[in-house]
Image 1 (cartoon, rainbow, N blue to C red):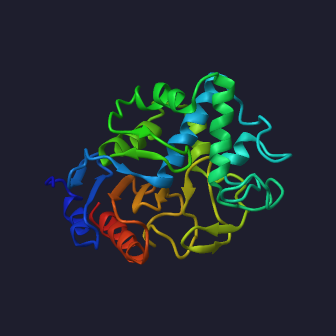
Image 2 (cartoon, rainbow, N blue to C red):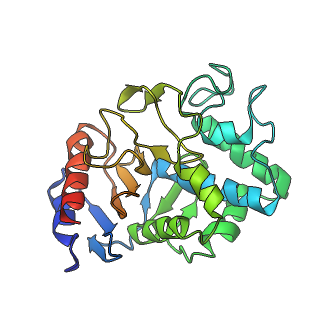
Length: 274
């Protein structure tokens, strides 16, 4: 653990009911704090979607695809897929709603989006992602080994690099960052997995947006503009633009009741110490 200002609240992960956990944070002054082996890769589950979305946005900037490409159910575009607004169900190809009507969290939508990039590029999505994102950022502990919706492994170190790159427009433009991290189709209601129906259920083209959601896996102290993602493998990542603070925590313990209090409590402590 470092002596940086957020090191003390990060030590709370040692009390979590998990076999192994590690965490890292970047404070408003740019100082980094860490706890545990932050170079160790973990399966990050749905945090994978952040990588996939940024890769798709890079592909759009490179001209490989456009966000208006018709992909998915009739009337859906690539942008709809990234924002969970295509109408596709969680894991199947049958639409449950018309595009732009409901926020339906869809793993399948991300797989369809990645397949579209691969088809247009002419080589596997994992290779495209490696060349466009992981290699340029030297994210050496990060890899896509399975589904573009939930099949990546990464470390706290690499995830902090990733967030910093997004914030500094290192891998994509400020316009793409804004679409990634601010609400798209902001009036849509829907279910946030693990936390029930939210009205509205805000999502960017990749990142979940906190807004006024309650209950939520971040803290009530997080600003409405906080963006990020959590994963069913017991992993979470957020950046709060108002506090200029980033938090990542990775575990090998599946998401469950323990996280409902552990994650918000850690978030509250990090923000209070900032």
